[in-house]
Image (cartoon, rainbow, N blue to C red; front, side, top):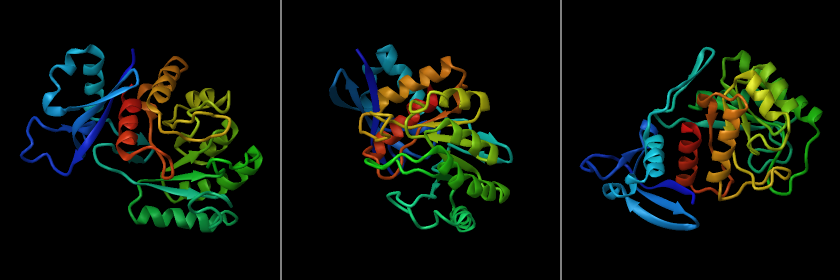
Length: 270
């Protein structure tokens, strides 16, 4: 039997809602109910009526993990906080990505300027990608992907920008981290490349685990909780520190905002 809790019914404020809402990850978001997912069945339990549910040891553990404050990530001179919503700017240096593909893919200076502009507009970090992983996208050769992302990351890092690298390939991870990226964001949860887990464990960098039902294709899916939790457990056994696992979802995926937040809570807290 597998039980998951998904925070739902988010509210704008906890004022006048004592006992009826819970704080998500110790931050500035509050929710008033859980969707309880158990053996394929789903039911809604209001926060105000959690007592009976929390008598279950796993449910109590999940609730504590979902609501616990998250420590900030201190990455060199930059600090990434989790006690308030933060914005990640997406910078695709590809000719075919779903959002900004083709805009700056052949001009590293222009791409870096676009990233800096997003930071000036309020982004906490810039996520740089050199390969589209949308459904049906062609696989990019590792050397081409490195050539796309490294010059941009070097420029962003020199400007003081916090950078994550969006890639499935261990070689690209290594090159990007060497160029100044501080975080690895892998749409395939370190499953696409056999060396990926080894690379991030050795680097000791924070890792973003996203869900892919078929890592060879890189596609995303709605049901992500179980896979991400499993990968977190594997990461622990293979040398990833618990604080270094962060999960998020990207624009264009099928995850609802609430499920994305639930996944993020679970993977951070494991």
